[in-house]
Image 1 (cartoon, rainbow, N blue to C red):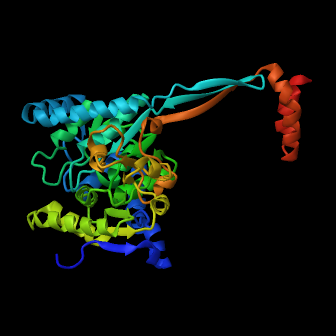
Image 2 (image 1 turned 90 degrees about the horizontal axis):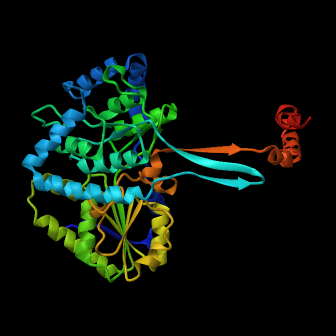
Image 3 (image 1 turned 45 degrees about the horizontal axis):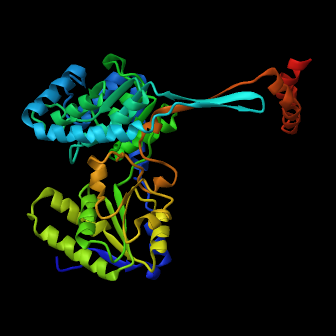
Length: 446
């Protein structure tokens, strides 16, 4: 690794094109996938969802799992197997689940009512009836995502939760991994559909009566380009809501010369480990820190076996997307981060709170040297299903709030309506709608 591994640049010296490229990163380009796969597959699901599902599984995965849906008994059995064979691991996930549950319990909503101008107005928070969580099953297993997705929905009061995930390609049983099924049981999922890709998203959106899968009100969770394209399609067709349009996972670290270079290096590498397209960006006021971080990354990778799969992914991701921006001030760093809109933002400075006070856009913020993203990914209690590709500008991570319909209501009194009748008449007349809108009020007082 004699060649520079990290791209280290002074932000003030970046060209306008380089800055535009930095900020204009987009989600996945879905056009080709949409035309070649998504639209034809959607038509098949509209015609007969069960036939479309099994045909797509055979086409993309080679074999339809049997049974295709695993219910509570199968999930409970998987949990028992994991407890018996990997008790410490199960206990670790139990601790994480307790933290996640405790944090998300604080987000319960009860609604409210208030009196305004002689009338009573209010909001009801009504949980969705049916939701579907997608959990990837390709390059790694994600039992932690099961906890992050199912627990908030259960706390919100969702009645029916379907988890969708494919069996691992190397699975000898042809079944989803026991650890994933065990977490589905621990978190309270109702069933697991053993399918992935666009076909799983369409099964949730259209419903599959033969499998007792009802059309979902909300589909969420990360996935590949086919999953993203299918989620985009079903949301565009107004079949259901979705969390956000996913892109590669990403971290921004804002640091000054007080930061620990080894901590920063490994936090960048932890993000790069996701996949070759993951984004890892350090924004720092210290050129010396930048140089030391690069040395730490090179040394860490050289200590690992050349053929190790995750090493190769991390190395390729850092080479493609690893970037250090040297800035003149932490205020400039915060402004760049806000414009970038990172999924994860770490702040490792002398005054983390002062920097956080300037942050307006981020999926989740991690403060201080002892708050690596990995802690939030697994254990601390916040949620790791977060907006990517700049979607943090307008979207938030999955939470209990994600699973409510917010419905306003009002009870008007005769006196309250009377007090507003003249204003309503004038306003409806200004909009050319007095004949019915305005008169529907005035007729009550004739």
